[in-house]
Image (tube, rainbow, N blue to C red; front, side):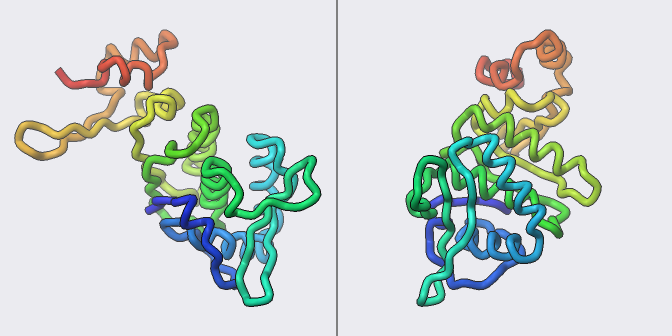
Length: 206
């Protein structure tokens, strides 16, 4: 389960490499340290992709303090001194953490991400969906389940990838696939965005 919290990621963990990002991300620097040491090529791939999404970032690395704490440094173009996690925006930390999560060398069989859109620039949502889709389709990748209340994220999905949960009059939640509605499938095939249809109540059950 991933309930990534930028505020948790801004904490100062004790230095020490860790393999997996925990649910709130307060060990972000430790995972960076592990990737730098054990999987430098994969880590460089993450940095390259972040640079394409956020062009001002040139380099990300770690710095160990004299008291054993670990600082995550973001080196931006045009600045001599680096910025630290505590100074970075929520969106930058989130897209970095999600890419790091998807690059886990030993990914879990099932990965649940809770509302990734919170604090994330809406134009990055399509890119994040593409990254998740690629990860899930790779051999050995995780099955990914994402919850959202953001139509912009749903716009990047196909009807067959979207499940709708609704609470019925019996008090139980019922689930159905967006692709089970021929009207929705036809409208998407004509170019209408799925999130827009949701916002316009076309995904509501009669």
